[in-house]
Amino acid sequence: MIVLGIESSCDETAAALVNEKREILGQALLSQQEHKAFGGVVPEIAARAHLEHVDEMIADAVKAANVSLQDVDAFAAASGPGLIGGVIVGVMAAKALALALHKPYIAVNHLEGHALCARLSNDVDYPYLLLLVSGGHCQILIVKDVGEYERLGTTIDDAAGEAFDKVSKMLGLGYPGGPLIEKAAAMGDKTRFSLPRPLLSSDDCNLSFSGLKTAVRKLAESYAPDGVLEHADIPTQDIYDISACFQDTVTDCLCRKLKKAIGIFKAKCPEGRHLVVSGGVAANTYLRAALQKLADENGLIFAAPPIRFCTDNGVMIAWAGFERFQKGYVSPLDFKPRPRWPLDENASKAAGAGGVKA
Ligand code: KG4
Ligand code: ZN
Image (cartoon, rainbow, N blue to C red):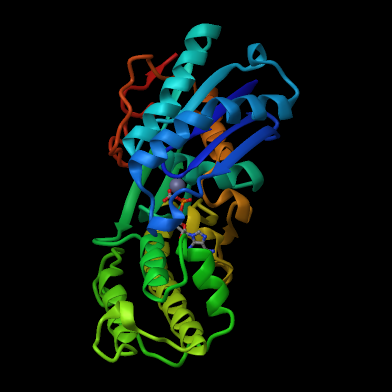
């Protein structure tokens, strides 16, 4: 059984094919470079670039898999949430292929792609505790099954990835910020500055990064003679030190709230064995090491997708599509692409909004 997945919800145009043996048969990915000059993703530019490249990515992935389009059993696309122009491009491509080849179309929630991705490369059984940290989302969830998610906590303002990107911009490091901050932090002193850890005293599993971001902004502004960030002249070593302190603070906040979540997870799902991290920020090796330690201390097994599959890719969409297809969940061809689509929207409807059981 082969499922082809298409990803186009942000600034990666990607396609991949997976099968029931958990093999990645072929994949192709293009990271749009057009946004670098703007320090963030420009939706209209992204949509146009997806339109230009989606056919080529699908063709390349199919070629790499050494199969023909007729061999594909179902076509999945990240059908939300995301930048709607790009989402529409991927959805229409998957629907067109499904219609022409008389195969099902599967609407995959982009977040579900991240959520299930670790199961492709690691032996992770349901239920598991998941930290989903990407550019747009930061959530702690119990993954009970395909389409069954219970959210224990979320950020009340910025996502962790967004905070990495904004801080990187403030320090003049560039976009996307995560990998650049991580690199700078490796040469910095994480004890030099004390940064705020918002919401840590609250009793829930919610997170907040906007106060931390503001604190870094104030620190960066203190290097400008007139207090204007753009005029700040921050010595290289100080950029490294601020990066290290910021990365350590984000990691500490995530770990402390996860510790609370682990208690809830164990009470609700005593059979659960895994702590999983996914999404773009999961590529951060400092965070991965801290989560490994946290899992060890709490008798859980830590699992994460390989670093290249943490940021957006076609493989995670193909895999989530495969898991849905295996359960018999396919979507109608009139499924409307969704700019917003919470993962825990309707836990009782595993097929997801618009999904039907085949
Ligand atoms: O999952 P993703 O590719 O796209 C979304 O669905 O949002 O995540 C992108 C985010 C960006 O904010 C990026 O800065 C962050 O993931 N990121 C990282 C690292 N690599 C990517 N954050 C921290 N450390 C990294 N190494
Ligand atoms: Zn993503």
